Amino acid sequence: MTALPQLAEPPRRRRRSIGRRRGMLGLVLSLPAFGLLGLFFIWPLIRTVFMSLHDWPLLGVPEFIGFGNYVKAFSDDQFLRAVGFTFFYTLVMTPILLVLAFALAFLVRRGTRAHRFFQTIYFLPVVIGLAAGSYIWLFMWQSDIGPTTQLLGSVGLVDPTKNYFADFWTAFAIVVGMVTWKVVGLQMLLVLAGIQAIPDEVNEAARIDGASAWQSFWYITVPLLRPTLALVLVFSVAGSLLAFDQFYIMTTGGPAGSTLTAVYEIYRNGFVKFDVGYASALSILLMVVLGLVSAGQMLLLRNSDNS
Image 1 (cartoon, rainbow, N blue to C red):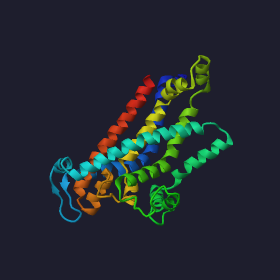
Image 2 (image 1 turned 45 degrees about the vertical axis):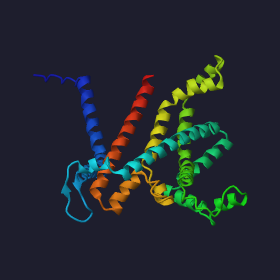
Image 3 (image 1 turned 120 degrees about the horizontal axis):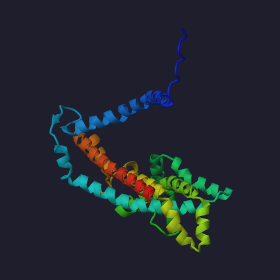
Image 4 (image 1 turned 30 degrees about the vertical axis):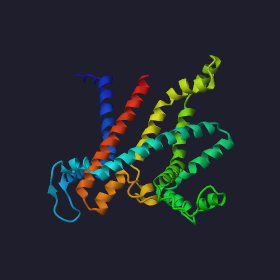
């Protein structure tokens, strides 16, 4: 008796089988990344939340106090002043970086050799570490020995003997100048990439229809750049909310604690006052703020896609 020929596996079942195998392979390949994520983010986050619920001295026995550290944060005048200054710094830095990034991106958007040269010049400060850049500007503005104070003092623009870090506004202006010099090159490249992704035909059609350069920019370029602008905006806001290095190095929180940021205050509570539990609670509160910023980014991107 002859054996019946075996039927071939149905195409739909075969596709499902291939899809399951690919899914398992992807899961296996993702395991190292999940392991690193759990080790360096999820576990420290859980540990931080646990510590924030305790009176946790650096040396001694922790004591569970529930949400006591969070209640303390909202009545801590020093922390509230630090948060207020951090938001003020963010409101100053964000438009400066956004406007300059736009301006520089439009200046160097052409692909000529000269424009590529200036792209490199503007981007060079980005490769310098923030701490290194802070020390450079700190030296440049030192009284009597700083090159900037000496140069500007020689033409009568500044007093070369004045300590510019002893006054809030001059110290703040120097920090803002340093961060702008350090960061704007990266944001310029992000905006430039967004501009170059816009098809030339769109602007050409607008010019044919009689649109002016300003109308083309405002009604065509800016709407098409909304995803890029959302990314640049979140980078600026998140970086400003996490500001620490520049103020720690250049102003040490002075004068009279007027340039203490939220992260600086977390550092002081954790590593100067050794109140680790309270510092953990402040870190969680700051993380919530950053989470809201990220949610705002996703909202902007979604609105851009739906428009």
